[in-house]
Image (cartoon, rainbow, N blue to C red; front, side, top):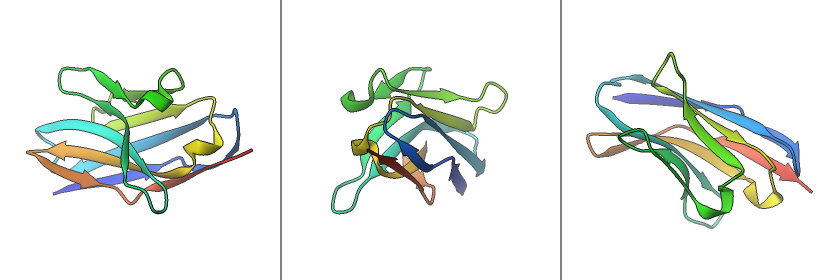
Length: 116
């Protein structure tokens, strides 16, 4: 079983920055992909950014050029999401996902609120 914990959310003014962290533990061998999703009330959870097998990255269009996903150099089960130039529409609960053997493992989420 994979245990996923996110941290780093908070309240920030528009134009500001936040960095989210995600740490996976437990059965962490053979992890395929790790990524960040977000969800607002009444909407489906959407992919924000992901690290793909082979070292690539994938971003949703609305965050390209503003958000950067990266993996910790020392701990490959720790992933970050650097969020710059934040906008009010980025307000959401952000979830880390760890894909392993075709199963998606979720954290509890961290709230990001961007004020105007």
